[in-house]
Image (cartoon, rainbow, N blue to C red; front, side):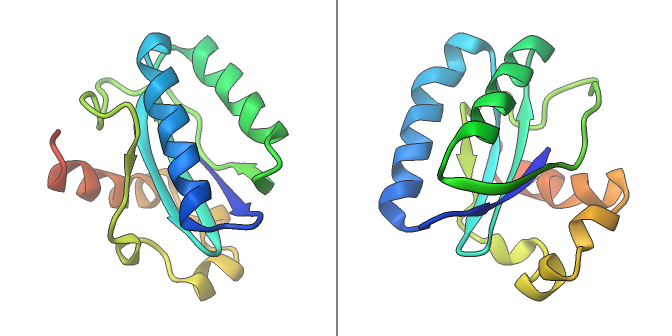
Length: 127
């Protein structure tokens, strides 16, 4: 799971990100979910470690992101989003407020606190 700040965020950019993810992720064995707001990208990525590492390196180099920060990296027993090449959250209010993000809430959250909104999102969108 990582967070970054969008650079020039708009719906066209989001559509491009999601289109590329949904086209490329299945062949890489990657699934996950992306929360997009004017102030935040928050993404949970699932799949083979090498594929995730390569994707994360691409994200770090992508000029649509700045201040990319790895929040959580761990092996999980089963995927939260096995049927989603990349789910986008249509209700990002389930996650931290812009004020909380600005105050560093993501960086100080426990692994359980970081996973919890994605667990709720997965339950609401089984695919």
